[in-house]
Length: 82
Image 1 (cartoon, one colour):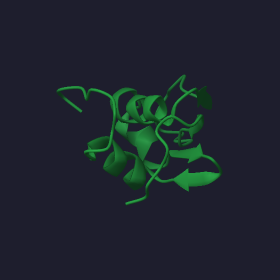
Image 2: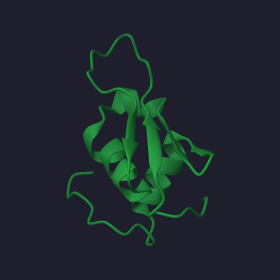
Image 3: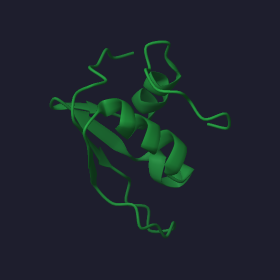
Image 4: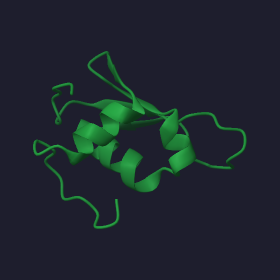
């Protein structure tokens, strides 16, 4: 698993799945932890599969996003159903 700065700004790029209608587009977040939370808790599963987050020019795949969300280092409270 990658080590990241959860306080660094981050950019979320959801997948472009034509089969899933969604209004979720590219978003910037003040903190990487917020981008990770949004990706796991708010994106439809089909959009998370191809999504990635960029933090300090490092690209995190959907597997990395889920692993960081589930890690002990993740600073935010997790949703009960995520």
